[in-house]
Image 1: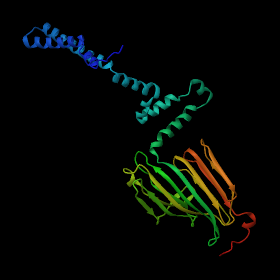
Image 2: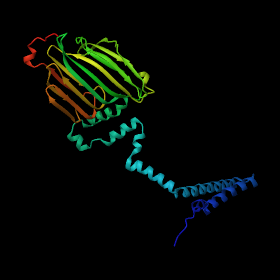
Image 3: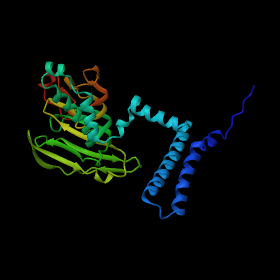
Image 4: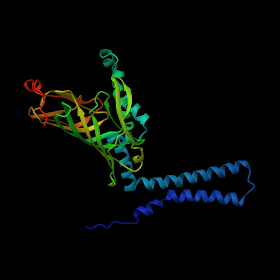
Length: 331
């Protein structure tokens, strides 16, 4: 037997006997107020109570109708899934509430506090670092292509590096690009900085103004590129730098250090003019990295995970001992 669905059933359900009862009570109380304007106090109280009861019945009947619809049920189901299962509501709370939620979630037990002294401060340190990420610029696609060679004019080892990465702003905008060298490294310089926007604009900085400053290890030269004008109109910036770093007559310590949170990096080095990779060391905590060293003259280090400030790489490039004692021939 085939049944036909009554499409008007849901609508007629709204006008149930309770709905009509509430409507009658409200109208009855209104008629009494109009018919007998000078009723005694007790009669006015009864009329007001009758009107309130009628309104309550009307609201209850409408809510009962709404709660029986599939839209209402699906909406409540979705809200419960967000709160109980997915906990998506945590993503929409303010930063301070998120910090409190994280602190409560990983709060150590009494037994853990007894075994590990001061563990709560240790955990809070990572909470603070995690929550402060919105106050820092972050980078991705960080690539360094470096070439070590002999500078025969100055009888020293130099490294030319091409650095490129994508920069994302903080909630307040972009921080400045700062490039610096020790004052004693007179041959080290930044030849060019290029800033590309996602809208196709390109700005090239070739003549950088270096200013002398005092840092922990002595005097240094630092050049600054202001990126504040891109804060409101660019979701990211693609940055590239061409740099030259100088070492001593027969060796150079080449270093890479993450100054901000970075989503992966790749560092490639090639040695010319008889130079070799003497040794290297990585400063990477909490992430997996890979080093490919096909020969003494080539080296590639890569990491495909997020790295924090302080992560770095040091490579010692030098002439072999038998060559270091020989004078460098001029062309």
